[in-house]
Length: 113
Length: 117
Image (cartoon, rainbow over all chains, first blue to last red):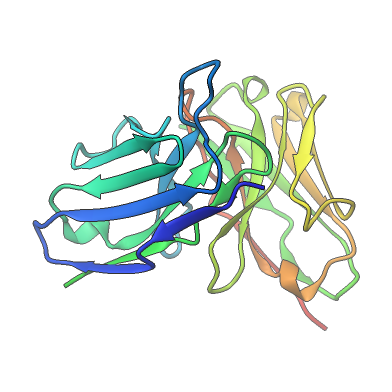
């Protein structure tokens, strides 16, 4: 199984500042046939279902603010929130969908400093 | 409006069984792979299983293989998870979700399963 490792486990950032979350997969999730990275990012708030933010490592889901961006390829990926807003407080997960079982990172808890 | 509504959760004794249902509306259910994902108390997200559009392919995580069965009824726009031999560690919120990333990512609100004597 592919193991997804996120860092840091928790993060406190001031309003308006940049937040960066990293995700590393134990093997590449880049398909040579499609040239796509099978990597998604989710935002999860208490009492709500997870919300897809980014898919194919860098494609923003419809309706997601453009302060959210994804980058990386192969085994190393990053979710960046360019200017943190109060409503961004949540736990963020990366997840691969390259093979089954799909696996999630352990989550990064983002708070306001 | 797209909706996924789970039902069937509740309290069950260890070794018991439950069948979760997920009713889909607002999108063409039969066009989507579907999956079940859970979150145990204080833990992260865990993918459990997925099923192809026509039900011909199913995949499971090892921790539920042989105990859980995913199925669907496209005529009823419904997804199911039959859970047998339940253990305390199966206590979690269970979400049904589309297994799609560019066609639309849909999630239900979740249903709580508690395994306890």
